[in-house]
Length: 305
Image (cartoon, rainbow, N blue to C red; front, side, top):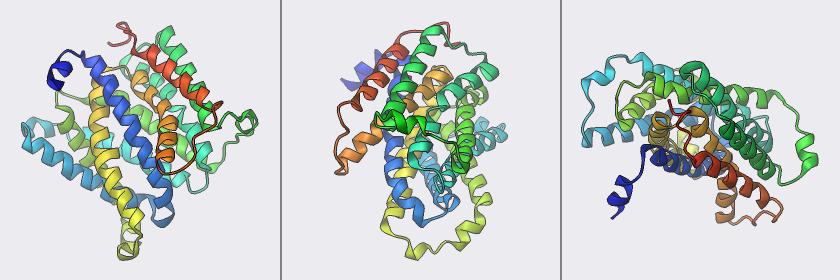
């Protein structure tokens, strides 16, 4: 029955569902990562998660239809893509050393707009008026949730060193999305994701070798290991396949627009972990992000080129 339903879906709709899954799983990494970041260096945390994710994806690809030799015809593609995603994650944790989580989350909402610009420059993807309205509505909704309906907190936002560092990481994330479509040569999402993970693992390991050697792995608390496993399996391996698939079937701005749902998912994660629900006025922002996604689900054939 599930296969029949899936067969009746268009690639674009499957892309939207993939990004819905992506946003929910990524939100979990924020909840766990905030507890683990104080115990381990960013590169030391991300190097093993990328390596484990590469092993998982590579095994999955081999158990499926295998990895064609043509996959490695241009290995520089995976270094470029892996470098962009590795840079994002390392700079996210580096930025969070000095930036308040609420400020970093505000910076994250700029990613869809940057993705739209990158999509136009690299692929000549056009952001239609409806998409522009949707991106604006989603941004307002996300900021409303992030700042918990506190206008004074929003107006007091100041960009510091940590926010600036994370901004460049978000720019790398935004560029990654159109690069997937630009550099993919017909590889299946799981195969292409494996190459990207391998590239990220190699580059992050090389860049963070000093941190890896300096880390006392035997004394790390359980939350660090839980975070590494979760981020590798759910927030990396699975989400990368989702992102790869969506990037091949949706415009870059639509793909990254799902980042607007992250604050909402984080709220749900926090509630599941025992924190109280936000006030009803805050939930207005959740409604705005839903409105934005409804607009994005409408067919924009002129933009998918």
